[in-house]
Length: 393
Image (cartoon, rainbow, N blue to C red; front, top):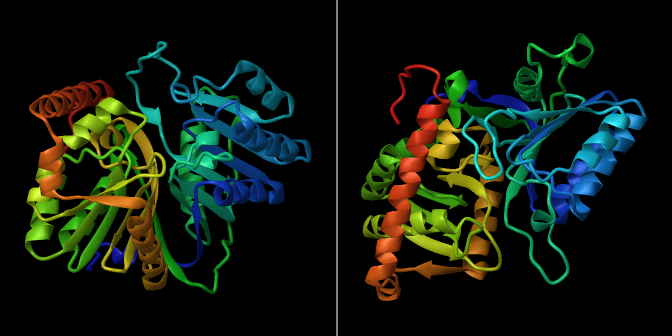
């Protein structure tokens, strides 16, 4: 696989893969407990449950020992975050804000959303992925966690992460004492020497770096690709790139969820099954629990992991962050893990069994859901735009 922007990847990183469940939340709690100077924590959802309280309590412990903490939660995704927990955090000395609280009602929002999930401690370690803070991502006895991934990175790219997080936190109306002014002067270089690039989507700020990296990966793939996606609804350009890659012989595997927490979105995705299968792309459905992952690997060389979904909501309505990793060993190990999950926990959808299980009524519902979701996303795009853009929708 050829990556045109290879020179933008920074070397000198240590990278650790984290899977949802205990490994992810244990890593977050450990990073918080080790923090000395400052913490930036930005996320979409924190539930008032056992998992949410565990992370909140870790942040409170850090604040009480003098760590400066910036906590930013999306106002829409964080609607369930209770006022009493907010007050507890502020009492402990945590700087707390809700992102973009305007134009939100009980079940509706029409402004740009903070969808990324990032924990940065002391500018030395960044944990970036797709997990919200809730029991459903941790799992409980007898109930499997939603499948998702994150990476812990240490090294020079943490400087870039801090820059992004500070820009989102430092709104102009903030008091001077609440602004983040931390700097990283001498980032550590790690012997693993993994090349990493943190990319973001923020349409309002004219950033579509994750979308561009997916398009580049599809365009330059030569051998194989695995896409594991939670809310899969690629646009016309991405579908064309998928079709072209398959026609030139790239072995493409797409893994989706058999069931979803968003039934209408799942129906809209089902409408694309015919396109996927007719273009000789292998299609699997994950069975044990909801699939919430947003990851891809290409040619055993390139991996992307983060909060970005292949749909226009992530392209034009949400702030997203992914880590792109250019490393044969990391990608090879991750590919083997994904293939193990595909073999053990997924069933393959073939064209024959897809046609057999789809009645005309199901097809009509899928088509209607697809059209409704696409229309809603176009309206959202118009509402979040602040002027003409050069990028095509």
